[in-house]
Length: 279
Ligand SMILES: [Zn+2]
Image (cartoon, rainbow, N blue to C red):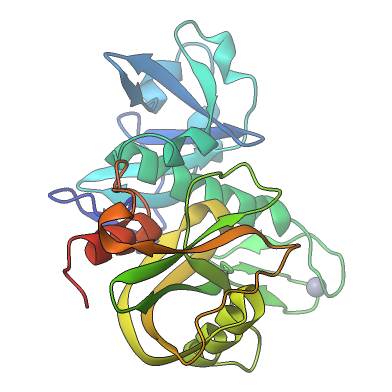
């Protein structure tokens, strides 16, 4: 999955550390990130790459995370593609390409960038928010309001009935491949309750014997996904929720499409079922 970047190690423990010239930075323009494309790979800039044209860039850097011993910072200056060789590429392509640790870094950076952008002002009193020196937290001096990065929990459900897995296709979304049942957890609801509710809402089926599979941070939608397998209970007639889904089908184990990108929990769960690793 996208977060499995071994042997590299991602650490997001907050550091109150001034950037140095060898540190890397992520700079976003809308949903695009600054990179150099070389040898079919993406490279992120270091402050030394921009020292000549943007000598003050290092002063505005906000610490993001480390991968191995390399520190990543966020900068807000735009138009950095004016420096020869550098260009902005959309972070959406990170989920359409094969698994690659720099894609994970760019997507997580984009999530943090969105969080900083969306919390520039206090949602209680409207004054400017200030970055804490101790932790990844923004606070308001005027009223004391504090806010931490927001992550929404979601469930993904592999509903099975003996040798068949329930696959869906979303309606009205760019993503056209087969998927599993998925949805946001509501306030006041457990993950298990969300599984039962989403399966009933999306395809009108009852399930039992829920088994937790794995979880996954999914930076593209500010979510953390919890994957469950669940066994069909009773009637197997699918009634799809038409505003959500274009298709819902029972697929024989050997016909479940293989996971080529190795990025998503959905893909890994479909592979696990196909290869009889589970059930
Ligand atoms: Zn305030």
